[in-house]
Figure 1: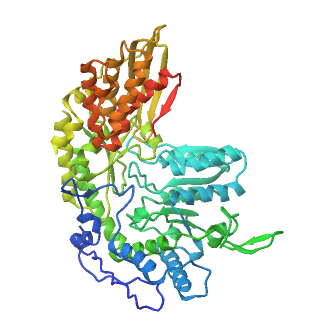
Figure 2: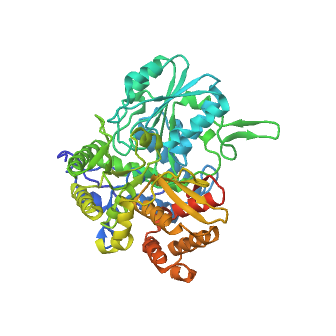
Figure 3: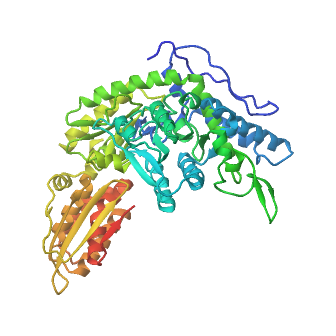
Length: 435
Length: 156
């Protein structure tokens, strides 16, 4: 644990404020106070089957701190209205809070401008947006898009659909037995035909951190753009899209302690403004006549219809919360838990960790000889432990290792070594139970 | 904790899960179907040989899945041998109801041997584990698809 880290202390919002929108406050210095952090998450007080909930499925979705719940409730209770429309107080207040969240996302990613932040339903929609809009306008038969072998289905299928529509080729960067991205193979695949490299920043099935700086540098040498799927990265490490020199970056809010139904597409402003609309309707047009419609610039060009207003406000609150703790501190804490989990799990007889890349973030996938992952999942559930079992929407990864399913423990900022012990004990019991 | 789990994982089920019966390719199968539960990754093939009267003379399966799906498939193959196409369908429907409907008693099917019914009842524990119902019913869905002449089913 990092001694120099800070605890969470976000002052409650003052509902008497004239206009909401900026609820960020600085956190005081202090140790990484795990008990205080856990107390911020109401669900962690729950018992399941009479046992404390041990929530180790953060890779699928993370729990929400009180700060996020309060921000969303406050919005609905005190200033909610539609955005970008009204002259009345509530509409101005809602617009300010909603757009305030966009600024927070821009700061979170160190984007050059909040105009580069597009709210989507989630990362899936963000990738679909880029594939359909940018890909539809810029790709031609024979052009190549490079993916990695450890992509989530959401970063495979949109490109396959584009392949059908546009006759492009997909190239897949292989991984080694430990789950490392094979950089040499990637380098060989790049050519003048490469127009897009769409890869995950952190693998959801294996935990591998992909060396994205080098991926981007080589892609740009060939004139290709790079989209990074940051769903499993942003909860665990600081991301600076300008330092990375990325072109598109996507993530979902609900894995970052925010609500469901909200995600982010970041893209370079010049790219976004050159892209055609994805969906069309209200709020994304400059003017409409039956002869001709002109479209707004980014981000509004890509946000047709009433957006997920309160979800965006909730995401902003989640960023405040994470920012108050500090991603450096979160990362240090989680790396400690990850290392402890890897050691403890490896000591369980017959257990094999799938994915032992050199650089990993907060995920341990594993199988146990003779016990199917689903039986493990059901068994540890009765000990109060929530883990994901299955193919993790990454079937090519399962195929690569010749397995149908794994169990996966994925850690968040509130998980402890003690919880790792509960999981390990439950797995040891499972060995005995299933013989 | 073990007691509740024992309702689901009875010894007989664990035994069938570990050493499934009739786990083989059936050379002379007259019908077969692939079953697939994409959420779990469970996959199996059910083979049947039906004679001219529509009676099941042999039945076998192959595949990969959790203890529940393997045990259910294994126990199904033991029970179906010698049954007619119509009897198989009634057992399929009865088994499905047993896994999904509270208070359903498989014995109400009548005119099946008690041993067979009692063995099937061992899987009724899945009712308390809703997410596992599809594991138990996959083999039966696949068998019914094979008998109906379908090649592939998915329980997603």
